[in-house]
Amino acid sequence: MRQRSAWKPVWRFQQRLIQATLATSLIAALTPALAQKPQTESAPWWRHAVFYEIYPRSFADSNNDGLGDLKGITSKLDYLHQLGVDAIWISPCYPSPQFDFGYDVADYENIDPMYGTLADFDELTREAHRRGIRVIMDFVLNHSSSQHPWFLESKSSRTSAKRDWYIWRDGKSAGQPPNNWQSDFGGSAWTRDATTGQYYYHYFEAEQPDLNWRNPAVERAMFDVTRFWHRHGVDGFRLDAVDTLFEDPELKDNPTLAGKNEFGDPQMKNVNNDKLPEVHEELRRLRQVTDENGQVLIGETWTESIDELKAYYGAHNDEIQLPMDFMFATVNKLSAPEFRRQIGLAESAGWPVFVLSNHDMPRAYTRYGDGMHNEQIAKLMAGMMLTLRGTPILYYGEELGMATHPPERKEDVKDPLGISGWPQQKGRDGDRRPMQWSAETNAGFTHVQPWLPVDADFKQHNVAIEKDNPQSLLNFYRALLALRHTNPALLDGEYVPLAGNDANVLAYLRRTKAETIAVVLNFSVESQELEPNWKALGIDSATLKVLLTTSEERAAKQPGIVQLTPYSLVILRAETKGKKAKQE
Ligand code: NOJ
Image (tube, rainbow, N blue to C red; front, side, top):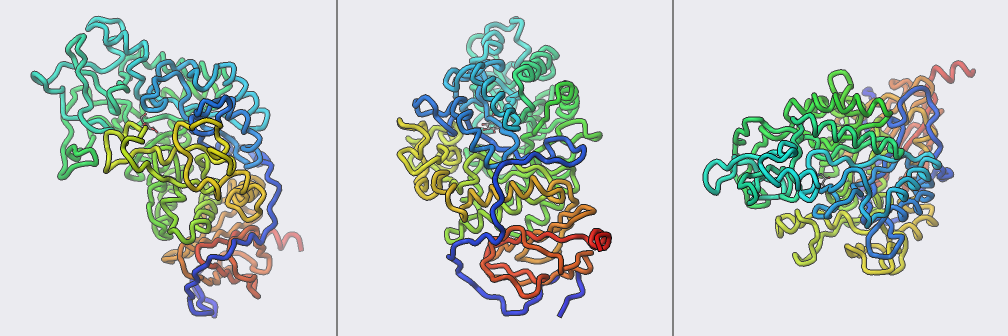
């Protein structure tokens, strides 16, 4: 019997527990994977784009030194084009001592020789643009490397012309730092420099001194950096650690909380050095400069509330166009209600920016996988990410089912975070292993020993194997991306949540005047059968057509009934009544 509410499961059969190990079936034929650029109206390009983060050390090694490089990336642009991504964000490739693998920049206007040359970069942007792929640089603006000439000059004397480019203070008393602020990587956020006997401030490691954004000369120099990269074809920036650009000028102590963090330091609330109001003023100024050059800003915005996230768009949408939603990214359980809640919140903040994996967090494949249905779950998460209203940012290898396995021994750890935090914090090496191109030695990434060992799973999860398997995760991503790019409702349609309180199913419509897409995702290990009240949703169920599914169930006799095997999804398309009526 049809339920009265717009969305209520109809239990036509008993809910069944299916230990599904069957191969996935895609009911819809896979569409050719060529990315077709979104055609619709006047939305800015980044709203329709799917971004793809490349960690350059680990993506493709063209010269066999065990490290990825720019020519390696260029050689893989056809792969990315066939996958259907519209923009690549390249994690830092500037000259750097590589203490934090590039997040310690020694020259903002060049390329580290280990990655190639500026000419290689120009070739990369040229070739990317030729394929309709935009290029985003990682802009590490909170801090530079302690080897940057600016810092070397700054630390040379108390009267150096660049002294005020960084934050220097006397200690509180002999041997005591100026205040109790802690580094995000453990220990005090202050390091004493013997040359002048003063302390300098670093939110991260001592090798990453914070720039003083209160100094107009710093602002000018950094704004010029964006212009420099504009001349080299860069389409936008991912703003690293943007939360922590400013500090309380009086350097007031932060309140401490009960307990210790993973480094054994007291828990602390960073009220005086995180998300100060000045950050927003600065972002508005930066935005004016990047707007002049048509560059988009993506934010590494670690927010704890929706108001904080909202603030990053700017009161007049004049700050960051794409602040990443880490509240969504850190829903660390496979929970339909939790994701429903976070998506609803993201919708209320502005144009959502969805991320599930990046170089700082365990990969989604590992975080959400249950060990038995990992492939199904990975497809489920992809189905959600790529059908929501908003801009998704993928992480290299996510499309293959790359997993995170942290190093097992401290002596193998390369990440400074893992070195200081071991064994509680094993660092991020496991999230940054070489891209898995094939089942050959070192996953086809390099012919010599790679800088990090390839993941043990590479023989099952790699491009060579997956590209020829119509049921692979890779081909599922390609199908989803193709669907997204050719479907105005998925690009611009409003988001209408369904299945309000369902504990197992996340469902929503994406709707324009002309068509409706319904997305139904089974977050549970049990089969689900549902019959939405399509009529109440303005949908003629006779027009429903399955576009893509991973459900093993035979097609239902009645088109309005949705059958979902464990962890499967269905994407349906319907004509709106209005359109149908017009055609008749
Ligand atoms: C955030 C980056 O994503 C992370 O990898 C880095 O360690 C810190 N910022 C410091 O730059």
